[in-house]
Length: 154
Image (tube, rainbow, N blue to C red; front, side, top):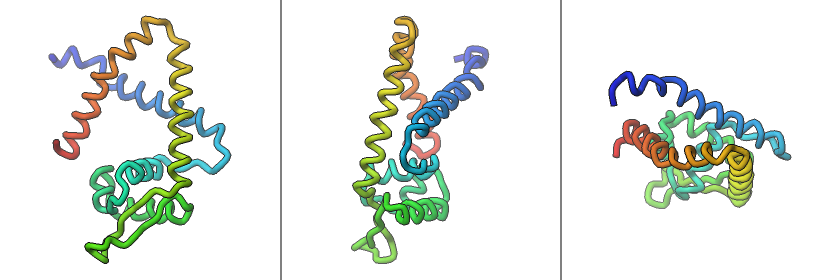
């Protein structure tokens, strides 16, 4: 793709994606009956729920965060009852992280409410816009994969 073909995407795509994400979070937070988690806390929690037993260092690498930052987030989540830390049986100096039932329930509720919100909003769009969004999903997934690989390696 030539540089002039990429020009419309320089800022507008990132701005739109960030704006959609921000608006979804705001809408979902309105209905929360518990204090909201910060974005970084949710990222750590989602990773630990997806990869039970991951260590702090591996989580930090996966999320492209400093180890001490992840450690601080883990301490907060443990204190709030959303995560538990267990000593690694192979290396007593390391800890393995696990999401609690409360965390899994909260994540599941958030995902269900987010899916319903997006589904309802997409349903309000004209058919041509819905088709365009559906057609864009594979390209957006490849974009995310490229960004991940460039950050983390294949």
